Image (tube, rainbow, N blue to C red; front, side, top):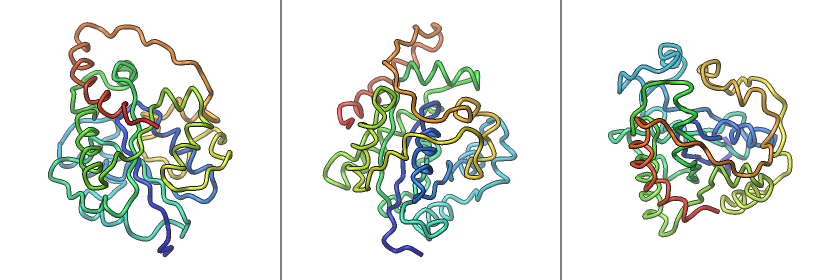
Length: 244
């Protein structure tokens, strides 16, 4: 066990660039990565229907206390960095969160309209709880209160507009060395990907990096989704003011 290892918990909602961020850290060569370790616990507790639900539950522990303890346990492979990709919606209110004190928490945000436009391509039914904005703000405020300052916040739009600069700022905030190796990775699936990859990861499996791009306006959502966008927006804005 590497007692000096840095454990990074990155908290995101779905349909962000969260898997690409996991690819980026894995490309460093000195970091282990974990893909949504609370997913099975979330599905088991809520009974919600997601693609490949039974496969997900069979692939991980469904005990949130056991999962939390493992997040601050030995780092896979004994590497000096452990990047943990977490979904905010998976951290249900009654799940123990004391383990979060043993990791460096950061937050990955994305404009609600873009999240919803992407989400409905994979799963037609969507609620405010499904996209994780409320939960993300609650986790952020809890961590900010514990630290006495805002934890690192990265906006997906900033990452896509200037990956090198944004990753460098994130590494500084996490007290990690930055390496340009984080900018590129080979295409394809990874052994580190969750078993749900076939249902959700088509785009990232084709990627080889963060392709720098100018921010693009997302067209207005269908009328039935606009109330969800309006409800999520204040929570996004509350974190956005702290972005790196």
